[in-house]
Amino acid sequence: FPIHKFFIGRRSGVHKNVSMEYHALTSVMWWGRLFPITIQRMRFSLSQLHVCHPPTAYPKWDDAPSKSKCTDIMNNGDYHGVRGHVHEIYHEMTNRITSTGTKTFNDPMVPKLKLTRSEMTVTGLYLQHSSRPSEKVIFWIYGGAFLAGDSRGNLGIAEKMGMLCGADRDGEMRDIFIPDYRLVPEYHLDDAVHDVTLAYEYLIYERGILPENVTLLGISSGGGLVVLVLQALAKSRRAYEDGKIGSYVPMPAGGVLMCPFVDYTEPKGSMREYIKHDLIVNQAVYEEGIPYLEKVLGCHENRVRASPCYCDFYGLPPLCICVSQHEIVYDQTMLLAKRAEDHGVDVTVGVWKYMCHVFPMLCAFIPEGRASFKFMCDWIKDH
Image (cartoon, rainbow, N blue to C red; front, side):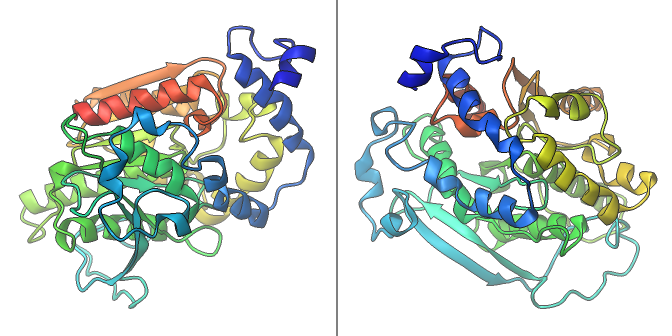
């Protein structure tokens, strides 16, 4: 940073109004577009996110609740690179209530397909801050264009969100549940929706967390999964009210969408325009990842039906959206916000200028990331 500040300063080609830290980050990350991208490299990169978010990085411990609350339990945090205690989840569910997906589970009147034992097994990581589990929990859904991402790589940044989102503003940190889900191209998008929805049912019925005490948070494609889960829950409730099914799973308190990827049709608008300068989804990532949408979802009609921004928003809980005006998902994010509001959903949108995709994940490096992180935390505490 000092070298960049001295030799280049604000002449990096980024808008002069962004922070010096973002200028410096641009100088470092721009070169990534010169390297070929593969799914394996994407998966490795996202598995290493925790390297960017060690306990010593933002937020500083002084900005968070007292450390003593994290040390009164037998703690394996050092092994996982976090402060809290991590439970590795492996639970076989005996029942699934919510129908999901566009491929096989879209009609509650159609007899449910027999699911395999592995499809009914919930896995993931549950991060607990103190000896007594918190009443309120953040249900964290990682991103990666449905091609990459894992629970372990997200532990560090997710823990920080739980630290800053004290329940009821009384200083109690929120536990974090990060479920695993199956990825494309080995599996279908429907499989990811099924896994995350089943994990939500596990959190409610097996761990006993009240739905109103759960906030869903999704990053990029994880934001799309948040909306798809909420839409499946709303559809299930309507089927219950119509007498088509015997039970439904209640809604969570709300959903937080961090730069959500929610339109799976042919790329257009900001999705095509801003890959020229986006630090995260550059031309190389775009060319590797986008073709899988058509391979997995098929024709245009299927892609529209699978895209959460074109689905029904009636009955959804409040949504918080954080996005950059100059990133690839801006257009589709604003479309989702408008359609949700038109359907009566309480939507709060925070827009930053000149930032790259998922810039809140860079909160350890740039002030804009820290400001957006605080924006989401404040919304969670208020809801």
